[in-house]
Amino acid sequence: MRPLAPLACTLLLAACGHGEPPANAPASATTAAGQPVAASSATSPEAQASATLARYDGYGDLRFGMDQKAFAEAWQGELKHLGSPGDACFYQTPKWVKTPSHFAFMFEGGRFVRYDVGTARETAPGGGRVGMDTAQVRALYGARVSEGPHKYVPGARVLRVTAPQGAGVLVFETDAQGRVTRWRAGMPPQVDYVEGCG
Picture 1 (cartoon, rainbow, N blue to C red):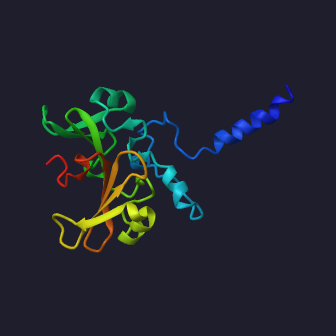
Picture 2: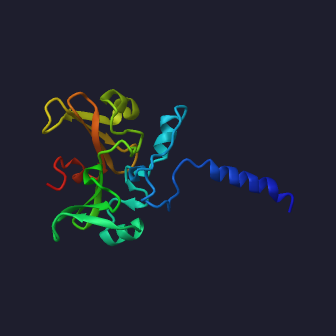
Picture 3: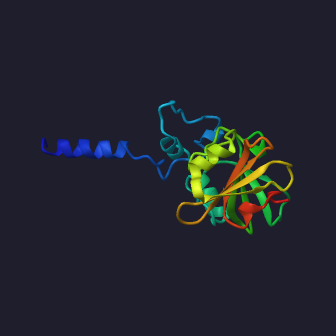
């Protein structure tokens, strides 16, 4: 039994050092639920970003392209439907969300295509968040950022970030002072809908 002890210790240390959230982490155990991930000032942005369930290709176990049944099975929690029955595009929010603009999942054609965040409690893939300025977003995402004017807010900007690999797009909206007010992740073309399902 004794020769196995070093191997067991090595395996335990390797498991503890894994930076990604577990694949089966419940999606409701997120910072958006009002339980922000604690991060000391000494924690690197990369380490902070890995603590979020937000991803370029989905959210936790939820992947873009899932149908509603697969989504509900992966979520394993109560969801509120926003919109009229039969709408081709609609949102669902977790039961604990009091303000839908803070956190919501978009569906179109019966499939999960995007999620929207309007609170600083949730960190975007790569480390972006509500409250950052344009320069901070550019510093995080570099050459993957393209910038344009906001369609409705004079002086505001839209920062579009492509995934470092694979599919998925991240979009940050700023106010006229250049501060991020909200962000969303999803698949084109839905991630670029300025009015949501409007």
